[in-house]
Image (tube, rainbow, N blue to C red; front, top):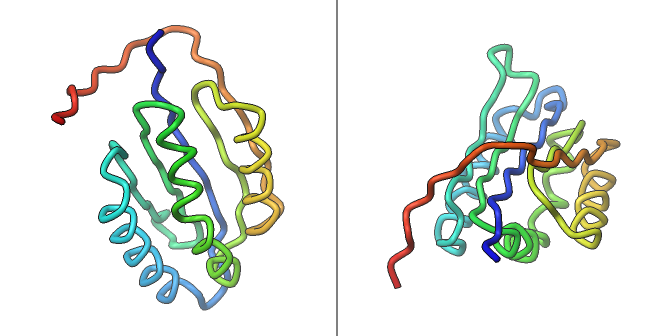
Length: 132
Protein backbone atom coordinates (compact mmCIF):
# COMPACT_ATOMS: atom_id res chain seq x y z
CA UNK A 1 0.00 0.00 0.00
CA UNK A 2 1.36 3.39 -0.97
CA UNK A 3 1.40 6.21 1.51
CA UNK A 4 -0.61 9.29 0.64
CA UNK A 5 0.93 12.75 0.76
CA UNK A 6 0.64 14.81 3.91
CA UNK A 7 0.10 18.56 3.71
CA UNK A 8 0.85 20.65 6.81
CA UNK A 9 -0.30 24.26 7.16
CA UNK A 10 0.04 26.40 10.26
CA UNK A 11 -1.01 29.98 10.85
CA UNK A 12 0.46 32.27 13.48
CA UNK A 13 -0.09 35.79 14.68
CA UNK A 14 3.14 37.79 14.64
CA UNK A 15 3.87 39.44 17.98
CA UNK A 16 4.23 43.23 17.96
CA UNK A 17 7.72 44.39 17.07
CA UNK A 18 8.95 40.88 16.21
CA UNK A 19 8.54 40.79 12.42
CA UNK A 20 12.18 41.42 11.48
CA UNK A 21 13.54 38.92 14.00
CA UNK A 22 10.96 36.39 12.82
CA UNK A 23 11.96 36.91 9.19
CA UNK A 24 15.60 36.24 10.05
CA UNK A 25 14.70 33.19 12.12
CA UNK A 26 12.53 31.73 9.38
CA UNK A 27 15.25 32.16 6.75
CA UNK A 28 17.63 30.28 9.07
CA UNK A 29 15.02 27.57 9.66
CA UNK A 30 14.36 27.16 5.93
CA UNK A 31 18.09 26.84 5.27
CA UNK A 32 18.36 24.22 8.01
CA UNK A 33 15.42 22.26 6.58
CA UNK A 34 16.87 22.54 3.07
CA UNK A 35 20.19 21.09 4.25
CA UNK A 36 18.78 18.34 6.48
CA UNK A 37 15.51 17.17 4.93
CA UNK A 38 16.02 16.26 1.27
CA UNK A 39 12.83 14.17 1.27
CA UNK A 40 10.61 17.21 1.87
CA UNK A 41 8.81 18.29 -1.31
CA UNK A 42 8.06 21.86 -0.18
CA UNK A 43 8.63 24.00 2.89
CA UNK A 44 7.36 27.55 2.40
CA UNK A 45 6.82 30.57 4.65
CA UNK A 46 4.22 33.21 3.75
CA UNK A 47 3.36 36.56 5.37
CA UNK A 48 0.02 38.30 5.11
CA UNK A 49 -0.04 41.57 3.19
CA UNK A 50 -0.35 43.55 6.44
CA UNK A 51 2.50 41.50 8.01
CA UNK A 52 0.44 40.47 11.05
CA UNK A 53 0.19 36.75 10.17
CA UNK A 54 2.57 34.05 9.05
CA UNK A 55 1.61 30.80 7.34
CA UNK A 56 4.00 27.87 7.03
CA UNK A 57 3.21 25.17 4.48
CA UNK A 58 4.97 21.83 4.08
CA UNK A 59 4.29 19.13 1.50
CA UNK A 60 5.44 15.64 2.41
CA UNK A 61 5.25 12.65 0.09
CA UNK A 62 4.46 10.41 3.05
CA UNK A 63 3.78 10.46 6.78
CA UNK A 64 7.34 9.43 7.70
CA UNK A 65 8.64 12.69 6.20
CA UNK A 66 6.50 14.84 8.52
CA UNK A 67 7.45 12.68 11.51
CA UNK A 68 11.13 13.10 10.63
CA UNK A 69 10.67 16.85 10.19
CA UNK A 70 9.27 17.22 13.70
CA UNK A 71 12.23 15.31 15.15
CA UNK A 72 14.79 17.35 13.22
CA UNK A 73 13.40 20.83 13.95
CA UNK A 74 11.81 20.07 17.33
CA UNK A 75 14.65 21.52 19.39
CA UNK A 76 14.58 24.74 17.32
CA UNK A 77 10.89 25.54 17.82
CA UNK A 78 10.87 26.98 21.37
CA UNK A 79 12.83 30.06 20.27
CA UNK A 80 9.96 31.06 17.97
CA UNK A 81 7.55 31.46 20.92
CA UNK A 82 8.81 35.01 21.44
CA UNK A 83 7.99 35.91 17.80
CA UNK A 84 4.59 34.31 17.16
CA UNK A 85 1.41 33.03 18.72
CA UNK A 86 0.38 29.87 16.88
CA UNK A 87 -3.31 29.98 15.99
CA UNK A 88 -3.92 26.71 14.14
CA UNK A 89 -2.29 23.68 12.56
CA UNK A 90 -4.15 21.98 9.72
CA UNK A 91 -3.10 18.54 8.53
CA UNK A 92 -4.40 17.22 5.23
CA UNK A 93 -3.96 13.46 5.15
CA UNK A 94 -3.81 10.62 7.69
CA UNK A 95 -1.52 11.34 10.64
CA UNK A 96 -1.12 8.86 13.46
CA UNK A 97 -2.63 9.63 16.86
CA UNK A 98 0.91 10.01 18.20
CA UNK A 99 1.72 12.63 15.56
CA UNK A 100 -1.46 14.56 16.34
CA UNK A 101 -0.42 14.60 20.01
CA UNK A 102 3.04 15.91 19.05
CA UNK A 103 1.41 18.67 17.00
CA UNK A 104 -0.87 19.56 19.92
CA UNK A 105 2.27 19.91 22.04
CA UNK A 106 3.80 22.22 19.43
CA UNK A 107 0.58 24.26 19.33
CA UNK A 108 0.58 24.60 23.12
CA UNK A 109 4.28 25.56 23.22
CA UNK A 110 3.90 28.27 20.56
CA UNK A 111 0.43 29.54 21.39
CA UNK A 112 -3.04 28.32 22.05
CA UNK A 113 -3.68 26.94 18.61
CA UNK A 114 -5.83 24.04 17.62
CA UNK A 115 -4.87 21.04 15.51
CA UNK A 116 -7.34 20.07 12.82
CA UNK A 117 -7.12 16.96 10.66
CA UNK A 118 -8.75 16.87 7.23
CA UNK A 119 -9.39 13.48 5.60
CA UNK A 120 -8.92 13.10 1.87
CA UNK A 121 -12.19 12.50 0.06
CA UNK A 122 -11.05 12.54 -3.56
CA UNK A 123 -8.12 13.83 -5.55
CA UNK A 124 -4.75 12.98 -6.98
CA UNK A 125 -1.15 13.94 -6.38
CA UNK A 126 1.69 13.58 -8.85
CA UNK A 127 5.16 13.53 -7.39
CA UNK A 128 8.25 12.73 -9.39
CA UNK A 129 9.97 9.49 -8.49
CA UNK A 130 13.01 10.08 -6.32
CA UNK A 131 16.38 9.21 -7.71
CA UNK A 132 18.43 6.90 -5.51
